[in-house]
Image 1 (cartoon, rainbow, N blue to C red):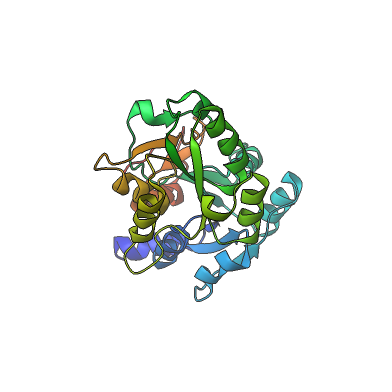
Image 2: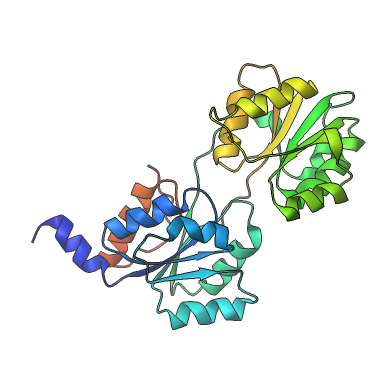
Length: 280
């Protein structure tokens, strides 16, 4: 039996549950399926579930778990052997719940971290409140952060003396939160990152119209992070990033699908001791 077939035979004994909260989720899941793993998926919305509709999954859970106990019961009922936390880096609650539930090592927990698009150290903010102490008096600032952080970001930006604009996702929740933060009319743009035929063209036009001098986004490693990094690379706008939360030291971390598959393959051959910090 070839090495590839041997791995696929072993992988059939693994049931991997992927918590998918980013655009990379379908690619991660398909790669695991291609390697013979039995895979289930958990997402928070029906819209996110559509990306997995054509896949041969063991199960697809839609919606948040109301408690840690309900999460633990789901893992036990589904006989999950490994959990992959591929949620958004700033989705702290579900990551904390997964870490607590998997703290005994059964099932095993692996954190998938998207690569960092980079930011100069003096442009990284540890918290939203740090924005209030940035040299932004009279600057025209575009907030491109999550809706849940928008109210705090607007308050901090006003304390810094900035003229505030924001871009939010086209969802009822995001628009409501923008209104609650005091943003409306020409202060607000509702669009998805990278929308349109040329990704970034709408954002560039928006910044030109509003005469934006500074941008705040999150160090998420995703499409929006990369888009703002590219648009600000020529120095026409200063980029500030809200620093990505650190993964716990006792959780295995990978930064690519290949590294994830290598770690899972190693796990089928025998458990690995200690935390793993995988590369490419």
